[in-house]
Length: 463
View (spheres, rainbow, N blue to C red):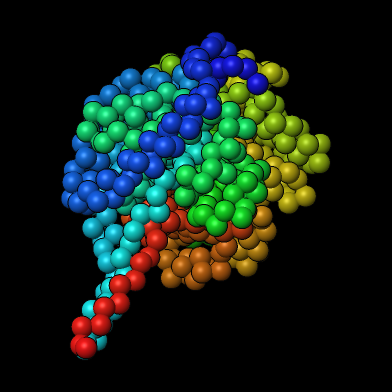
């Protein structure tokens, strides 16, 4: 392990950020400071916490253009879309600020003569947030904002690919007047990350990332009896029913598959299409994908940027090559994209047909700009294939028959079910997954529960 964090930009392979790793002394001081700061913060009235968090959002969005440029260069999101991350953080943060009154309110059972009774929601203490690079602000704020609103201290470990995001959040909280120590970040090695999870001064871990990363968190936290929230991977499906609005379905499902170069845990990675509309869907879908412009993400005309690193692109190339060898058909010719070559993070979009679940591209998370399209004969076949996965983050269905769609949705194994949309987090709805997509919940009024513990008050007044 080198002595410093180095971020290689996928834009041109240059070193974009260098930072020293946190020293053991710095880590120890940060955890002590969090432990001390949270005591006063938990006693700060909720209204004041909300006001500070609101000022933090104001300070953050004031730097929209600079933040967008940093996202572009750190992880490759096209500059024309990068500012949307700022918009998304603002939406989620302001929603959680508004919902805090309800989400943190005491629970009061029916009145009982001679007693006063209620359940109070108390902060858990210090929350350690581990955030990924693909949506570097959205994934972080899902845990950071409700944890701080609930009266906790937060220590953020961001991805080594997007370290400036942690620094920008610190800057915004500082400008808002958040007391020192309530929010901190640490640039940590993998080994030091494990040590922080083991540390008795950490009371909850909120992790967003890969399944192997989630297993590491569970293994290291085992026996500590602390809360662990895991938002992991996905192989999210979409089903185009016979009665779907095809134009809308193509636009929405394909955008869900290729936005952010397919690097979304809830992106569409496999599409099932009813046989009666399959040919028409495919024709429109191929035209949609072919219209994407692969290029440098700092070019305003680019609609498809590089994936985060060359190894990730080569992984997707391997999935596609295996599928083609097994009989799949590629509808996009990579030769038409000069930037796409082995060892490059620039990867041509790809749409495959003739696929089935014997192929990794239909079962293993791709996290890149590729989607398989499979023909089905019935709703029952579609539901069976959609559920045939170790993952269960989201599932999308396109139909005009909402009652039938909801009926099918009840049978799908997913944390979020969509009709006629996909790849979106509504901050007023719970964000959660099943199976290897993780456990726990963020966002909505339920999103405060992970960062609080119930304390019952039982007072006998008639003696």
